[in-house]
Image (cartoon, rainbow, N blue to C red; front, side, top):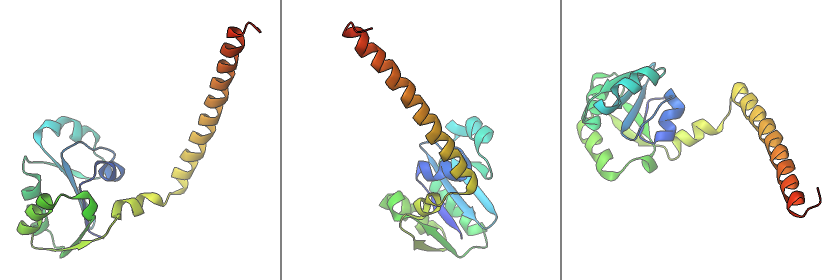
Length: 148
């Protein structure tokens, strides 16, 4: 599926990096992380699985990439886009845009086996940390009450 993202969390999920001024395009086997020059060094060092493209006009750059691609349909989540931002890209790109509400959320909600293992480990560590914290609070309360 060809899609474009604007939400920072969704972009981070896709390529392991995001910033406050970025667009992400996934077009078949190609992916593009488009941002401005403030993030050049950091993005090139941290973006995984996508080509980093630097341009201060993200929308024009995305439209250019879309027009050069062979795709004819691109999905997007209308919740992620401002009206003006979407109008800028859709006016320049010669592709059909299809709304898919919660597109990135639906992709992220299904966990891989590896993600499930990480979540289980995090839950165990959290429970252990909570028990340790509760034990320390108990000591503090008892000490304040002069019971210890």
